[in-house]
Each structure stands twice: as structure tokens, then as C-alpha cells.
Image (cartoon, rainbow, N blue to C red):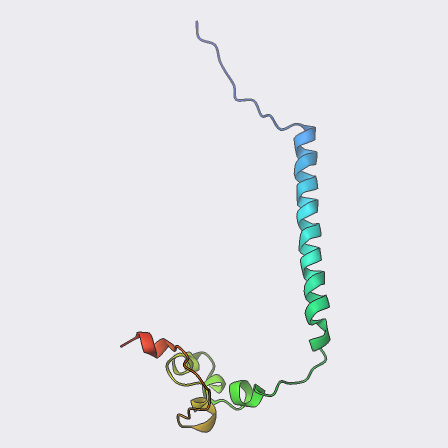
Length: 102
């Protein structure tokens, strides 16, 4: 004689409450992280610009191209898009995407 064994679900009210409390803890942790981020960086929200915005963003020919300029950004020196030619203004070496694509 064969007995029929049905898979029983072991999730009871206690398990459901436990899952809900774990989700609530997750949301509290996320909230703490977001609040901490605002405490650290909130004072920069009223700032209008940084000193390198023109060179790197607003007047850089590569960034003005949008997505089409990504290849130029990754393969040339950062100041080339602003000055129109390569200038070695940054001290020290910097690895670029083009250094690895020879």
C-alpha cells in the first residue's frame, strides 16, 4: 500500500511576521544610509559649480558630443577636448583606455 505524501507548506503566521519584520529592518537600514548620505553631501547641493566644470563638462568638445564622444574621452587625454590639442598639464602618469588597446 502506497501512502500519499503531500508537500506541506511550513510557512505559518510566525514565518510571515518574521519576513515582514526583516523587510522592515531592510527599509530602516536603507533609510539610514540615505539619511547619512544627505548629512555628508547635503551641504554641496546649493553649490553652483566646481572649478573644473568648464574644462571637464560644459566647454569640453567631447562631452558636448554626448554618447558619440565616449570613444574620444576614453582614448585621448582629458584636456584635449577643451584645448583642442594634447597638453601635459597633469603631473604624474595616468592610465588611459588607449594604453591597453595597442
